[in-house]
Structure formats: structure tokens, C-alpha cells
Image (cartoon, rainbow, N blue to C red; front, top):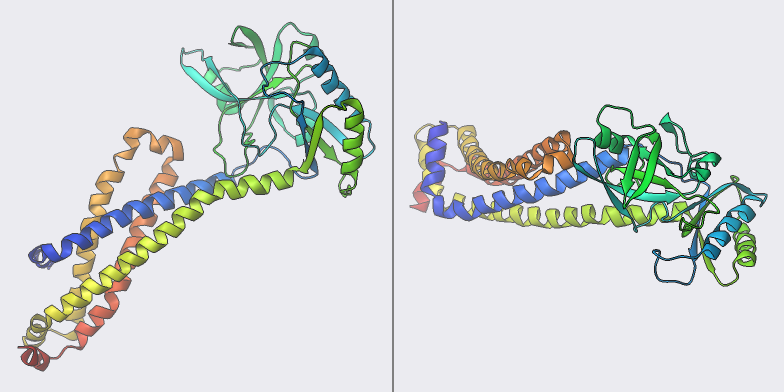
Length: 396
């Protein structure tokens, strides 16, 4: 039976070639969109690593274009801003940072691991109260302490993934790391810290201490302020007024992290939404093409179907033949797509998205294509089932 079905498909290879290509490209598109959607959902379900509720971001404009140059006066103002903000009644804690949570700007650094490999990581420069503001928990070692500011080296806290890449299974605590000849020592390890938001890729993170009052360090460009729950929006004016008194020639923009989070969420969800819309229209075109080809094929094969019925074939057998031919054609298109998709592990795609997501993307693409083609074949196969032998004679 199967051999006969393949023979029927082969005999109409010209008519089926375009349909086969449509199924092939549809499989690739559905696989890509499904994998991206599963990858996004998998990231969303992971712990974020910090608490953003009741936290405000104050963006500082220090009236210069570059973060690579700064003055001791700027660092002094930054330290005074932290102190003045801490003293305000609704404020629970305040910390400085070079980049804000959920922001799109980032800084990266590179190190050499104990095994001699190059390791990359996002670098976030933060002040000592950063963990208190964002509720970051330390898994191993400790967070920054006041005494770290007086050390001849800079303290750092790293993510578990970065510690593993740098030192394998060995403890990274107290180990020196160097970037541009600046000695830094790891004092603590945290779990996943996805500064860019729930939909971002879990990646290495290197938190570098901004030593308040130290002119050798550059001041942060953001102040993160944790306020009491229920703090009214009117407090924003008081906050800006106090800051303006410390730095009258600087400007300040205040917004809650919840707003930054919503913006980042929509931005990172956009590729999935666009891919889903494109995949929907492509599948709609494929469905119309399948329906049209099957309908035209049925009209051309009226005689064949009628003769099968006259030879004793049941209506159910005729309907099953039409559906199985469509299944065979779908299998060929999916098989071609699988041959191409299964080469992606050689490019490191599986390592990037993970084996469960990769396998899930393939599974969803296969289910969608078989479901679509079977659905499109239902009506033409039902019409074939209703053919009577006499209709083949009229066709003749």
C-alpha cells in the first residue's frame, strides 16, 4: 500500500513539486518561529534574579558625551547624591549603577579562564547597596562590604555561570581576575541575574564595585531608589528637587522600573509576534495552495476514482487513499526540512537555545504541518468519497 502511494505521488511529480517546496519552506518557517517562541517562553519562566517592584530609576545627565572621562568633582557629587537620597523619609535604599535594569545599553568585558579560554561577560558597575535595592541574594561568599572601598583591589560579584566558566568546579572566592591590568577579586557568587528582563538570554554577569568617594572610579549614570510601598507619584518632585540642590547643572529623569520593564518586554517580544504573523500568512497561503491543488487533482482523477468504486473499492477506501497521498507528500517535504534543520547543531544553535527547545521546535513544526495538510485534505477526500461509478462514465 505504501509503495503504491509513493508511486502515485511520483507519477504526478510535476503537479506535486511546487506543493512539496511549499511544505518544505513552511516547515522551516514554522520551526524557526516555534523554536523562538519556546525559547522566549523558557526564558520567561526562569528566575529574574532581582526584584523590580517599588524601585525607581533616576537617570543622570552629567552634561558630557562620554563615560570614559570623568572628574573627581563628578564622583564627589555622585557620592553626595547617594547620601542625600538615603536621608529622604520614603526611601528604603539607594544605589548607583552605570546601566539601569531593563535598559538596552550594556558594557562587556573579557577575561582568561583558569583553563586558558577567553571568557566574555556583561559588566555592571554598581555601588554597595545595589543588592539591597534590588533584593539580590548571594549564593556563595558575600556581597560588597564598606571595607572593600579601602582595598587596593576592586571587589567583584559574579554569576554562577561566569564563575563556572572561569574556574570550573573550583571556588572562585578570593581569586584575582584582571581586565586591562586592573586587579579585581571575586568576593561573592549570585545565581542568574538577567538585568535586561524576563525575555533576555541568561548570560554571564560581572558586578564591579563603585567605591563611593574614590576618584579613581567613575560615577554611575543611574540611581536606583527603593521606596516604601504606596509612595505617591508626587514624591518624584521632592526627589528631583533635592538632587537638583546637590548638582544644579545636572538634569534628572525619574521613572519606575515597572515602566522600563514593560518597554523592554514589548521590544523583546516583537520578533516573536512578527514571526508569528508571517508564519500565519505563509501557512494560510500553503493551505489555500493545498486545497486548490487537491481540488484540481480530484477533478482530473474523476475517472480514476469512479473506476476504483466500480471495481469494488469502498467509499472509505477512496477517501483514505486521497488523505494518505497527502500524508506521503507532507512526509517528503518534512523530511527535506529535517535534513536541513538537523545540521544546525553543527553551528552551535542547540547549545544556544538548549536541547529541549530545539527538539520542541522540531516537534511543533512537524505537528503543525501534518495537521494543516490533513485538514486541507479533508474536504477533497470527502468529495472523492461521494463519487459514484456512473460519474466516471459521464466524465468519459
